[in-house]
Image (cartoon, rainbow over all chains, first blue to last red; front, side):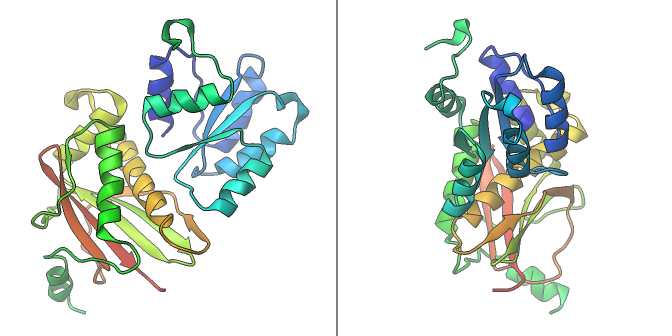
Length: 118
Length: 160
């Protein structure tokens, strides 16, 4: 999923950084925290899943302003509520289109790079 | 049950009471046509007969609905899917691209299917490999057409 998201985000004009699982994601955040404003995270990942990743990120004040979007097939209301409580800002349900992704990003105040602004 | 008896159950479209075939067709149409921009025909067609070169993606659902989903396609279709997913031409697609793409396909199918079931369920990580004959009769089998080629979905329930 990260490769699909990466492709779409690059097409939208964003600079992207990728991680293969939640732990790698935490390491990327540590390294690049000032450069990153948005994290798109899959729920279903090896090593550390998306929910655990969100919990880990939100446990640190320095990431309070980072937007976290969960990309998932999860439709179970209790699971979604759990993720929201943990600090997810928005969900993108799979399968999705680039238009849906853009709408969701705009909903949480992410500005499109100038060339793609709608 | 003998292998030939299992094979016979796979010869025809088989519906599962817990997951309507229409729901499977719709989720696959959303995935292939809407997300990947591929031609997808949601009408069940004659069953696909996998070969030794076919690619099989598998995902388990654990919890209140113990089940396993498999998507089986030809190597050629797997390459098309990977190309559509990652924006590559078929001859640029690597084996790793095919495995990533088919893993994502079965992840979306399993995840969406899970949404139809009441109860607490979790998805495993997907597994992609060559085709392996099933060792039990499926609860659901259907073959659809994607980019002019068959894609077979099998669902196995291990308990209720």
